[in-house]
Image (cartoon, rainbow, N blue to C red; front, side, top):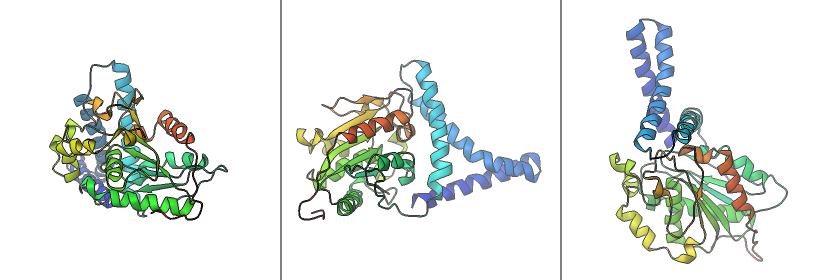
Amino acid sequence: MLAQLLRRILCVQALAGAALGYWWWGTVPGAIALALLLPVAVLLVTDLVSALVTRGPEPWGPWWRALGGEMWAGLEIFLLRQPWERRAPRYLPATGSTPRVPVVLVHGYLCNHRIWDRTIPQLRAQGHAVLAVDLEPVFASIDDYPARIEAAVAAALLHTGQAQVALVGHSMGGLAIRAWLRKYGTAHVARVLTLGTPHAGTKLARGTRTPNGLQMLWRSPWLATLASTEDDALRSLLRVAITPQDNIVYPQRAQTLPGITPTVFPGIGHLQMCLDPDVTTWVLRELAELSPVFHATETTHD
C-alpha cells in the first residue's frame, strides 16, 4: 500500500540524512538535524523543479503563490498525512441535517484517501455521506481501478438508500472515474467533478515506466481510446476545475475537455486543488445543486 511505500522512502531519506550529517559535523545532533531536514528538502526541491519546468508565460505573482502553497501542501500530504495511514477508507455518514447526494472521492497518482482530510468534514456537514477510495495497487493500470470505484459506489448507495452518487476525482482520479463510467455506465451518476485531471495527459509522465504513468502520457493512445467512447450525454455530467499554475499537468490546457467550460483557479498548484478553500467551495456549490433520489423499493446498486 502507498502509506507503507512512503514510510520506507522517508526512512531511507532519514538514514541518508543522518549518515551525511554525522560525516559532515561528526556529532549526533548534526546527524539528527539532517535526518529531519533531508526529507523536507527533497520535497521542496521537487516542487521547485516541477514548477520551473511547467511554468508558462504567466505573471510571476500567481506562480510564486502557487509554488509556496504547493510546497506547504506537499509537506502536509506527503510527510504528515499519507505515510501514517494504516486503516482502509470507510463509509462516513453525513453530519448535516439535510440529506444530499452521497459522494465518492477518488485521489490521484501517488496519493491515498488522506488527501481529502480537509474536504470530507465540509461535505458531511453539508449533508453528504462520503466514501473515499484507495486506488490500489499503486502502480497498476488505470483500467484496474473501476472495480474499486464500483464497490465504493455500491456501498454509498446501499448505506443511503439513494439511486445516484456524485464523484469527485483529483488528478489521475478523474481518469479513473472516466474509466469507471466507460465500464459501468451513467445510470447511478448525478455529477462528476474533476480537479486538475490530465484529461489529455501530461508531458511530465515521460520519465515514468508504470502502467498508469504511461497511460497518462501527453496524448497517449489510452487517453484517445477513452475519449472516443464518451458521448455528449456522458460529458454533460462532468464539471472540470483547473489551475493555470498546475506543476504536474503540463501543458496546463491538458486539464480541459472538449465541450466543457472549465472553472479556473489561478495561483494554486496541483496538490492544492484538494486543499484550497475556493476549490472546496466550488465543489460544495456544485454538489448542493443536486437533489437526492431515493429508491422506492430497494436500496442496492444493480
